[in-house]
Image (cartoon, rainbow, N blue to C red):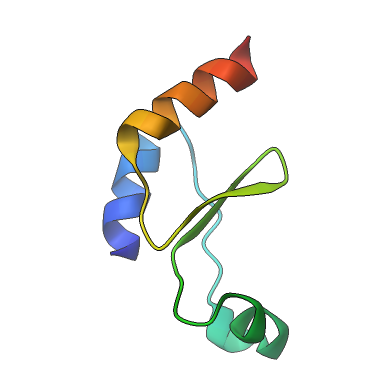
Length: 64
């Protein structure tokens, strides 16, 4: 699923920062199995799955 999210982001011109939550007990506790997590403008926008149509809307709002 993380690979799918990565491809969706790349397709929309976003270079995702990949973080392995297993390397951080704090992140593992915070997100658990709800990955991938996508933040836009410092806010968590997606957990578990990236919805491409919603991503387009969010990006359009950020660019406006």
